[in-house]
Length: 419
Image (cartoon, rainbow, N blue to C red; front, side, top):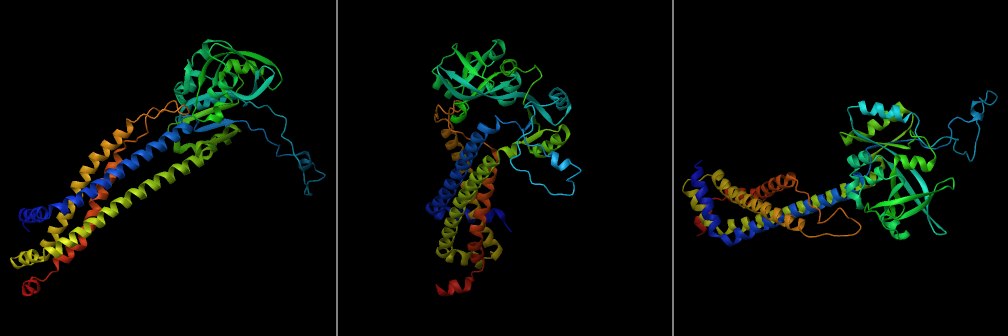
């Protein structure tokens, strides 16, 4: 098989019908361009939406859940041990909301190689007192450095400095929605009422905006020390220990281990945000389906063009076979034509796809609900480009396979006799 000769024949056939060849290549280029653009944009959108939740959510949350005691006096009684009792309207047992042995738990977690970081927290319900009106709210008591390191707290603070929580006694960072409802500015004093009815004055040192408006209307942040003072608790009191792991996929198994080891509740990020993961998977699947459909449609275009080329080049094929070209040689000629279209269109599609996604990435996207987002989200994952060129080659190969096979079986005697 003379590859140089086959190449020259393939090139001659391509250039003989260059307009049809160009149309086929443009079809592949357009399909690859839209495939890359669609996947890059949808993947970027998924990353943005997941980031709003996942970046602010621990991989594992350890807490003490208030629930009814599993062991009731009736079930422990020797008198009724052989009876089956029905107990209705069981109330939660009297128990503290904070974690037991929180210090020992943190010390153990710091030695666990699977743990990337730890951030203790105190979550409590309060009322924001505005004149004679009480607005329901919540305060998260945090260690500023740990919260910022693990959950990018600074990125969501739209006014003020997060370290003022630590440096300024009795200070608070309000959610943007809550601040707007109370008409307060940085430096103002607000009053909050705890669950015991005690009133505490706090100085506003910043505003934060998570992108979830319902949360921003009620949530606020104080230092751990200020929150413990508001609740009248000791310096060791905390309600949650937030854990980030080195590998997020280990969270379900590690959460079960911690729950058994520490005797407290442990919920992993996959369980807490299963709806978001499902939505991301569905959006990604739709993107791939649409992109592959575009490539298949382009493949049918190449198939039709090669079919027409065979009918128009019957004489040429007959001459090639009459002068010594085998069926495999003719098959190789038309396969190479299809692959040439696929490779050229695929490479051009990758360039145009990168250019289009880069253009989209530069378009301003400013919204008050998402202060950390300035342009439309794009994911420049090389995987999309590799998948696109592979699908381009595979699709065009199969698009040229049947016409090439048909051309290789043409009997030159029948064609020449017909002429």
